[in-house]
Length: 327
Image (tube, rainbow, N blue to C red; front, top):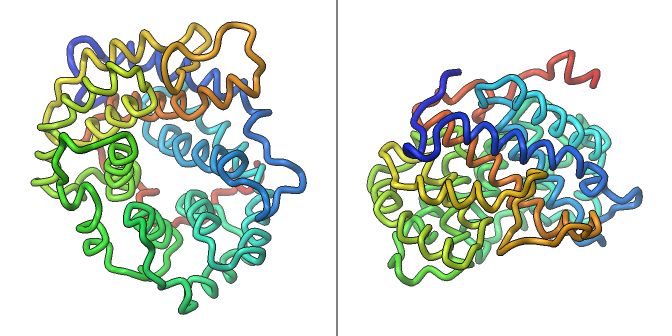
């Protein structure tokens, strides 16, 4: 795959590639912090156990599939395979579903792997049974989260439990909320509306033209606001959204500042200067893992541009490759 639009003169392919390689190298060194506890159950806090691993799987898969450089794809591929092994080749999802039948996060996490053809027969049966229950169709208050559930259903090959467009219309992106009203939570909501709508950048063509223009118009102002606060995590997500849009977004300054926030070891702090040298690995991981993942993700999307083909893993399940099954 060849490179597409790059953000601007200050963020060409080489700087973007350096940021991605550096970020993925740090993440690879942090594998022990991504490992799940041996006895992880539904009683565990998913935000400190399953959520980081699921985010690693989600974003490393996009990178391993679409980045034009083999070295970057190889790093991401190793991380993705590591994440699958941590789920005991999918068996963990069966335990989670049996323990908490109406929870959505096991299905959302499983969908990341199912989209690539990785599956577990017992989990497949459980997912289809559980998502067919009346309780699964109860309306959820968080419409952005519902988009994530619907995207997972599509990835797994399930019938949507609600109309995607109708749910999208109820989100911050769908309503095109007044741009000056976005606080931090609402801004993250809009970025995730985009990610679920476009399948994390794999299908940017799904973005309605009027919403693309809304984002193209206001992302520069939002970037300026969150750059002032040095909230690098949200800056990275907004840059990823900008890379999904069909028209250019003036984001070169944001890329330069984000590159400046990345440490020599590749870590990008969520906010501010980040942890000082000598900080314990677990503490550094908590402070940096998500923003570092997002940086590699955004750099990949910016590198390849919005005109990329959907590819074989954008919503189409395929058989498990022999090499994947053996890994």
